[in-house]
Image (cartoon, rainbow, N blue to C red):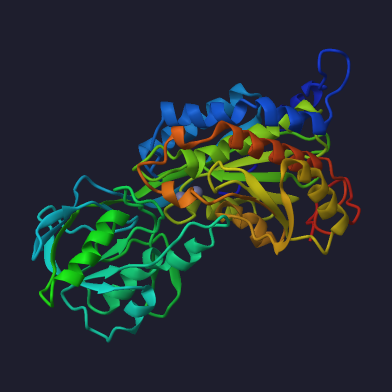
Length: 482
Ligand code: ZN
Ligand code: ZN
């Protein structure tokens, strides 16, 4: 899939026509003014996320809905003056959730429970299955269960996730979803039901991808799980757990009906666009998000907002003049189901050096912390960025940035990465639920994101030296920065 997407003619034309920014009174807009203006009145990010959630809605990876999302995003980028807008296709194995999502306790306390399938779940068939539920309070408890002890049964996995500003509890509770189904299957389970990996007490199950683990322990992200797997909403999970307390040893029987389908190979794609720099030979600044969402919500927090934030930052930087380096946005396809877009982008472009990568994929609440992976190798630049974002209430950090899911190419190149950490306190109330809708976005906090991104991207895009090391760079051709 390696190809040259960016025609020299279009690139030259943009260089000639790039506007010189001015405020209408003959005084050029500085980067600081552009960021300050974004904090008060940016409209780009809201326009993007409001538009895509309204006109497209849910964007399940590999489906026609995701394709409409990509087309919508390309039109938006073109309408806002991005250059070299393209949809870079790749093929993927596509899973869709199907129509029947039911869980019902048949005895001893018959009643329905609210469930949704996990990404990659197998189908029970439309008639469902009935089996005894065995409860595990954690993945560790399931792991300790004897071999074959779940033969013919449904494993239920709980956890005790709580909200955190840095989202760190996701790493603690996430394995119930990521590996629970495969672990249970290895012990004979016919299906797996988990307490949603989330923190809200609404009857909204949190879906999300499962990570298939082969028998040898290696992971195969994105491969369908061989057994049915679903997530109960937190109130329904709590109800099920109370049933175990009241059953006095009687078996708890569940009828589970989930009918996902595998569509086979379909086409997804990565949408890219650029604000072309004055020296396009310098490695670009890569801003990433993902364009797909789960089927159950229009993906406002995850990740329509992220794509809006990065696109808005690129446009706001341009208001302070054409940047030295090209700013490229990457709206990755098929992130949720296995990072297919991020992997495809890296495979296609691994030989094209990236100057620095940043991703926005943690909702739309305020940025509170700045991290880089060059704090020691380029202390001057790290320090300048930290000083520049302090006015937005963003703290410096000695954590080493590792980047998000859509920055595979930068990690694969061993390149420079910045993480602008967002407040995740309510992220897992909404993440992968039907509640991930536009009204949850606070426009004030969204604009704070855009302001911080504008400030940071503007500094990076005007950096003539290696972002990773601070060493001088030859102006052409582009060279690896590590
Ligand atoms: Zn996401
Ligand atoms: Zn997600």
